[in-house]
Length: 298
Length: 300
Image 1 (cartoon, chains in turn blue, purple):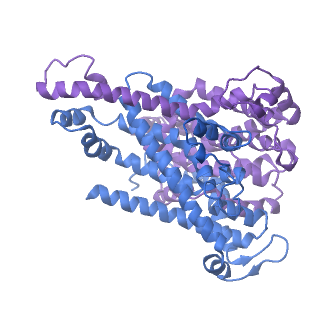
Image 2 (cartoon, each protein chain N blue to C red):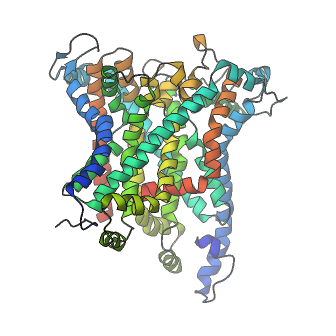
Image 3 (spheres, each protein chain N blue to C red):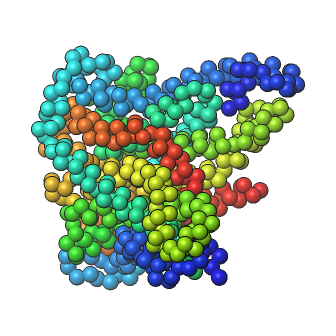
């Protein structure tokens, strides 16, 4: 009767015994909070006084009356774009380069992954010093040396550069992770396919676009989804380095939500923003699947 | 792959000559360029960490006035002494260890149980349960902060180890379930049938067959999750207040003094100390960890 049942005689109870504990934890930590957020988003509540049902007021406020929300949303998209270029673009280039090496692959993979094991607090400290101008930090010193001294600036207090400055460390941190995944996919491309194409006189570029990339497309979709959902939940580094400032110039939806909840203790409105973030993630994943899958069929 | 094989030894069955000789020169230039490029990229990736370590050995004066790229004028361990005076690094490391262990036990055990129910035992709504677990991979962790904060304060769980362990384990569970169930697919049906004929029920089969066979996957799951859990900032920052329970990321924040003044060299020394445990694990087990991360995405 059950197509995927491997054990011929198992009782209904045994299924429950194995399934209930994990579902209980998962429900308490993930599923129930999602429902709770949805519920709270229709209320006004500061955690102390009575909850007050306000219908769609929070949503109206968010979409119509809150400039900071829109600012944070646009910032979050830009932050995501920078992370994606650094992580996926960088990962694809480096994975291709590493796959073309004959020696030292393991060493490079290990070194390249190193930043991924450092905590975001440590990374925030590190990059505050890299961007600093007094005493002169690594970035400004480097610019000075290569004759671009005119670009020297306090990267984190300049409203024009701060968003890029807080996005770059996130990109830097996880590019190694995506490189590994793409590398594993690249070396799994069958040699016969590549060799046949080379014999047909295919250029390096054609080899990549016509043979390798189509072959790794499923993994590329997975990594794009991973990088996108991770980019949309980016929080630690901007929160720690600038706390969204100066002004709102590096505010993301996540940092704005956090401050609304735990600085202004406006739990209802913070939940409304959380709901928006969840919807945003679901839409993003849907879009990626739609665009990348459709392309692969055409 | 082609570039590495072609110049080394000409293949026995010789392909059309012009194609080969045309390709032979160009790959050399291409290879040199790509070597240079990859060196540059690796330097960008690793230099900041080397710099962080060097700075932790600099004198404060040297740090404040010197060229940031210069090697330290003299080496000092004073920063490390100050780092241990300012914060309770041992305590922080111990707390991170407790949280990481606690969450990993839950992730491995519960992940394995769920995968066993879905993949081996099978039941009517297993597709739905799989779908539910997918939600946890897509949805950002921030969604849980406000609700959990409210729930914890209702049941007095704020400021405990559990307050960090529960969400960390909950959000890592889906990946663990996927990794285990894709591994369980490879255990042949006959193994189970044979055990069933010998009279073993689902519990004994889980304990005697599935569990021992899964040890490699357990290592993968633990390594991959530990990176994220060891470094968790957001749950610790939201749910924990008392010094006694602060994990490493929270402990490091203590180095920001009043008025945002920071003793940088001591802070970097503290960072180096706190990186060490995970770094050692990473360097010793990096092959297993890399394999885990690779399989995590290609299968999950």
